[in-house]
Image (cartoon, rainbow over all chains, first blue to last red; front, side, top):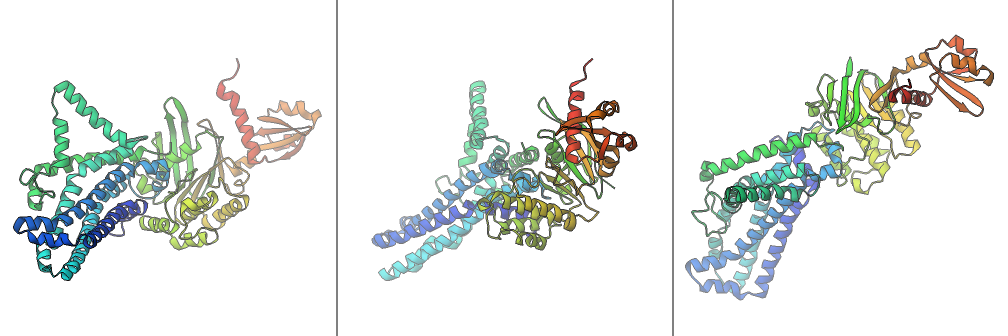
Length: 283
Length: 291
């Protein structure tokens, strides 16, 4: 990506306007780091307790705080992504700044792409980076506490394995939170471009309507099942359904038709959003 | 070279016709005043010209179709809308960074020079600025864009008279260079009439008068008629008549000046007076004449 191009500048502009995109994951990161510090001071015996266990049990006890930290930061990212999308095109019409943005030589398509890039690429990468930093900070804190208690620091680092956890997280965030959820973000962006007011409602009503009509007319729940599958299951879900963070194998992911179907659904939503934005104007 | 060419330009919102088939040609190097009462269709016409609204009819701006090529057109066209449109969350330096990043013809140093004369600082947020400062910021950005066509929709609303005068002076002296074309919509005629080369009066979506200032000066005459001459003056078919402190002011369209000089004091009407004359003449013809 050319860093001085209109797309790059527009993404930068999105981050200036929506500071919650990076403030929320950073705030979550700060909170979990602080909570970890407090727990190390308040309950120093817990770490030692983990070493009483062996094998898988010890692994689970040692890794648990790190998984929890990751989930908190991830959740912050998901919430921010949803609100960002619903607001993206709605606020520029509400404050009339759309008239200013459109008076510049930036196409509607570039603008739509810049807004789609935020939840699909920027947020997953930001939350990944924030989580990796938090993991290292937590490990350093725990290491210090363990050194004082005479516990084997190396075992902690081996069990938590921050590098492989970071790599897994990176794939998980990019492929599931970004690209697998892309049709959902694209739908929310389209609702935001299209709704005259309350984009949240307008995003939900068509989905509800389709589900109700399908249930009443055909008697089936295929649409809802499909949505649920998209929301909670990745294509790999069946293989390791008990894992909190399904292990993403990028090669398998790229080979899954569902992955590509999602992107194929996202594309027309975004194209429609560009069309709607072109028509949304000064009245 | 023709910069704007409109034929049968129309626009309706539902059943309300806002632009009723306008024909308009604007040549390069002109400064056109688009004048009309509120709701005459000025903003709609300008929005169509810059590709912000869909329209019926034919419209060609700098050789492009504005509706299908807005982003391309905006490289050469600069547009300032009639409402405050700068995003409230942005800081001045961010705004300048962004415009400099996306606009190949933006001269950041020039914008900063123009802003130096105002109270706008790089760190100020639009949200914290006064209405006048926001307008000054927007106009500084507009004047720092090396555009071939500058479109201003009520650009000086909410500004004090001193700044308005300075703005129009700098528009004429520093910005306008004979190759650029400027279209200004306003209903404050007094402050722009000295810079215009052409004027277009718009009334309920139609063009009531479209003329160069030179033609207006040779075509329209306002006569202060003494009461005893009133009957013979009326016989020459004035387009408009009004009373002012015991005298009658009659405006004539295309009546030889020699014949009017006998009736009283003769002069070229101001644009504001001409505007009133044209608008009030338009009223009966638009509603249909009595049988």
